Length: 90
Image (cartoon, rainbow, N blue to C red; front, side):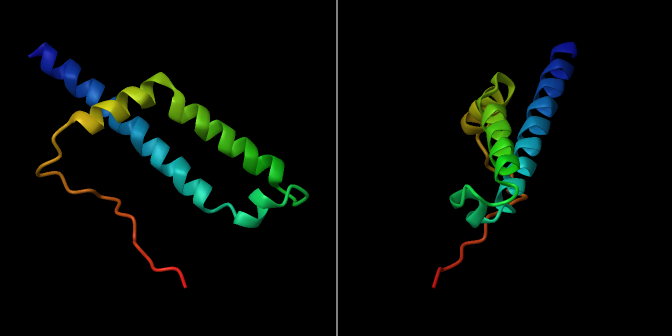
């Protein structure tokens, strides 16, 4: 039973990492595109610092492990809590 607790703990940690990553990615979506294209805008350095931090987070071993496991797990019966809304651009 101890192995089951260990596996559960690892899975919870991986879910936590992916949830944290999701939150950070939502943060990026709040950065106005003009700031990313206009290097003279206020807040540009902060925006790029946030992007760099998120990039480092995505490349970190714990997040990569969680992403690989999520890809390999059969998701049948698991409904995605966060679904991206598809919108037509006009």
